[in-house]
Length: 93
Image (cartoon, rainbow, N blue to C red):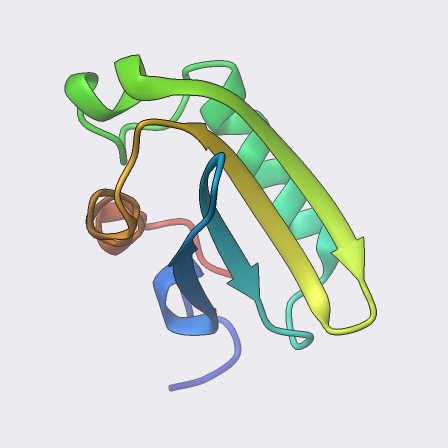
């Protein structure tokens, strides 16, 4: 797999949090690319999440840290729902 064939599912892990779900994106991905993906989700321009999953999202935030970038998704969501949505993403990183 080359650097340009990767999608969000290939470079991240998902875990449950008290507020919803956190997606940890590894350091090999530029933060601006993660911000672009999240911006598409926030403006409804992504088709990765099902209508049911989108309805559960109450907030989304990107946090950049030393160990990579994190996407915090608030709402009554399971890691499996977000993993499934990421698997449908075709945006390459």
